[in-house]
Length: 213
Picture (cartoon, rainbow, N blue to C red):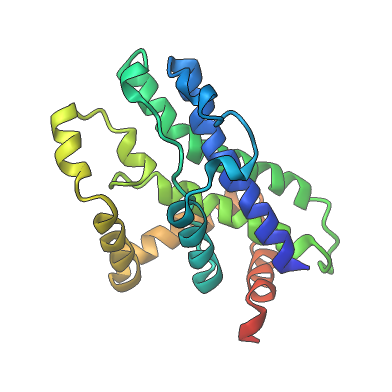
């Protein structure tokens, strides 16, 4: 049950993340997102075979890591100001935090013994916090980089690093203890701060990765 709860919930959160980007872009002046069909919670509208499904699900199954996909193409030149461009970037991580907070409220009603859907919901809530913090790191192609007030020339030069910088980031998180401890400490601290029961979330991770038992 935990596996299904997490997978279904994660697909929904991927759609919510991208929908939030699109909605703020629409409010900021990029009306093309409506014609592209982005103003919906239909995950098929945000489906990119690699970035939207393969990578996020691969990271989730292999390491229990919440990596949102990237499938919404925003025509930034249509946005009314650079502030709107930053708001579009921040909308995705904020949606993850809001969903994590909502799940934390629901988890207050979890029975002391846990069981059922509760470990899955707790792990899903932790994934939302993880996805938000990961996306706020100011490196391309993360949303935190998109929120920086950089000039178009500098942004283009740095942005060329693209997916290579993402893999560098993950290598730093895995093999540089200080950076990894700071990252995971921030996740667990934020999750604890909004009321996510970490013991139940860890149980959800164990249940989710049933093949490791």
